Image 1 (cartoon, rainbow, N blue to C red):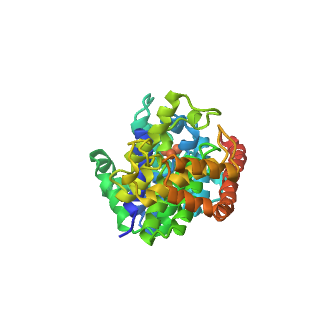
Image 2: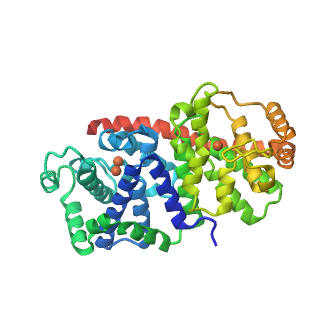
Image 3: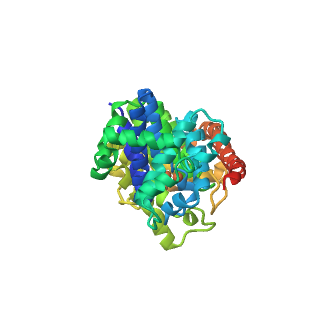
Amino acid sequence: MAIISSSDVNNIIRKTLNMVDKKIMEHCEIVAYTLYKMLQYENIYSAQQLVDYTMLGILHDIGLFKTGDSENLISYELKNVWEHSIYGYLFLRYLSPLKEHAEIVLYHHLDYNKHSLIQYPDMHIAEYLFFADKLDVYTRLTTDKKMSAAEYFTSNRDKTFSTRAQTLFLEAERAMHITRNLRDGSYRDELNELLSLRQFSEDYKRGFLEMLIYTIDFRSEYTVLHTLGTVTFALEIGKLMHLDKIDMYKLYYGALLHDIGKINIPIDILEAPRKLTSYEMLIMKTHTNNTEEILQGVVNKDVLNIAIRHHEKLDGSGYPYGISGDYLTLPQRINAVADILSALYQKRSYKEAFDPTKIINILKNDSACGQLCPKVVDCAIKNFSIIARNYEAKKNATMGTYIQIKEQYEMIYERFKQFE
Ligand SMILES: [Fe+2]
Ligand SMILES: [Fe+2]
Ligand SMILES: [Fe+2]
């Protein structure tokens, strides 16, 4: 059995979006479902295309993680449309398995009467996505409506959205009762069914989860490399300590997902250029509880425990549960060391990157005082130069992507000013 299934991937994305903002999560699913039914009705797409476009629908507002103020994400969906369209596109383009279709997200707020300015073969999907988005935004999310939905859609036809998209929707609605399924909630089962019927390849699953995690890490320059570091160090140590194949898989997913709960930690706490106050520290510590809330009941129990126990200490002084060494397995201990190693190795808002001697001394000290596993620390120290070399090679690629995303964002934003 796969450690993480296709529907687990969907559930992790859903629960992460939900933690940020329930309204956004519902909006993304409703839009994805509407788009899926329109395409299903059109009946010219392969099963894989249907899954790809539906996943794209689920992720179409992923850029809000970067641009929105987490207090009120939905207002960004309604007003500041370019920022999150551009970031969403860039995350999908550079970090997801949907690279080829990413441009659809770039245009998901672009009025139909401007589409002729764009040369892009998948523009009709952007047209449909835009319609599905507007339908939910106008009928459900807009509170100060100046006209009825019917009037709104008639008066904006071929200006805001295309007749083609509207006609397709109305025909699909008649044949497949989209709005009824949205109202009674059965659309969720249908989405789940679609995404679990088609078994995702290991690369496809990893691709989505890595994209989600990097999107969270990319919120702050200081955390860009954190998960990458933790995963790389954990796998290096795991290999050196001869974990079997299954444990290596579990360690990979546990390390990858360990800080997913940081999605909910305010950016000013993540970027505080000093030691956190005790109140800020309390907030910061909730990230492990958030990680648990997202992964609980979704992923394999061993993966869950590797992820949520990365701040536990052998002497029971860690958090969130103060679990002692007797209960901490080798993969959990490895992940805890990898997490610290990754933090020490990199520059943070409150500290510079430490040199190898300093890192080794800190690890030795934490192991001597009974917090970190001595065997894991020994292995890490003995092999420090190999571990560090492998990480350096990967680091440059990720940092390069981060810089590329930032540069491209500025360039595309300039181009989009003409659409305002
Ligand atoms: Fe949007
Ligand atoms: Fe949207
Ligand atoms: Fe953490």
